[in-house]
Length: 294
Length: 294
Image 1 (cartoon, rainbow over the protein chains, first blue to last red):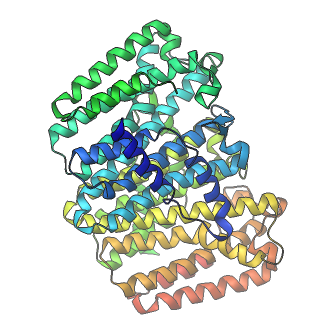
Image 2 (cartoon, each protein chain N blue to C red):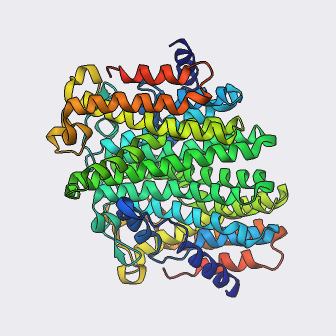
């Protein structure tokens, strides 16, 4: 998709300039933050910020700091999730994880720093557009709410893994995890971008529903990939879900049912965005994610 | 000080209502966040937000969410600092630390949650005052910048402890740590409050200088207390700085010189705020902190 490539290139370029050097004593901290932030990745959340901003009529230039903020927050969550006390993962985006390279203390701080800098960065963008302070506040609020939901989802994921899921409530608990840990940030990216364009309620509602379904679909696809692909293809450790007895769509319903669910969710996502999907971009994106290999 | 007690009571009450219940699956996460947030403490940063807001003419009601945000961020930093990978501390504010009670994974997430919720909370406050969006954005920006400086200071503190200070640059490195790890949040609290009152440049400059000096004085006092008091008095492990070979004012210059420096810094802080210290509140506060026992 040409349009996605354009967003991705814009986001990638902006990500290279969104962190301070941290010259002097704090250089190591910002180096560690940059190491994880610039390790590649699909840049899905930044692209969604830009796509929604453009759809709502905002300038991409104005939306870029929010795109970067979403990726900084996503990256902080990966760094903390990979820590020994959490998933204890040593490979991410094809490279050793932060704590392997910088040690555990610095990895915790690099995550804290990325989460914090996301808000420093958005505040800076808002200062450059004082006449649009309200739109910026709404957008930053969407980002903050998404980040909070993500932490809640991760907490429940961790508790499930350590204590086991609540008997008889596995499907419901899994829904909570998927909607919060993964979908909230997908949905939040769309809403933040749309708020910058002063989107009306219809557009916000459609993107919200689309984002939630797309986000859950994305996580189901991830569960399938974890079960069915190799570490080399994915650039991160795979097969760990099953090894850890983790609650996933695949562990609960099997691969075939998961694939059917992924297709259904994709169609539901497309249907919910259809009324506002002028050029079919959001539908194409959902179909592309459905068939992703990593 | 009666005025401080009034601020403290207001802040304490607001802190009890600033976190969501996290009903359902994510209850444990918010319980863990609340456990640390409501463990008492001096509430210095919230009080400074309120004092500066009142001095600048803002409504205390409007400043309270920022007071809570500063305390949430301060608390997240304590939780993460206490982790086994960092200071490995088991006692804080007279109670077992977060990771002792909730486990390491949940402690990391409780910290993440508090940092994130600080921004959710400020965004909510800003939404209630749409006509004052610019002042709210400036205040939230001050909070974010202070939190980032704090993380940078903590990173340098950790590196110094693990690798030793850079030979010949100990005093300079210690200055960076004190100004960033501790003083930035003291200064940031004052600036955030002042921004809400649309403070002029003279007031901002005076509070900024006062905050920096008061903050460094506060840390020097902490170093002295760590060297000279008991865990029972302090409600946290003491004497650890020396045991860990930590770079502190006391380890570098000794107790006597530290006490002299503390007095000098206090006088400098008072002098810098004098031009705007109408009723002498900020001077009294500095003198009170100079003689604190915990």
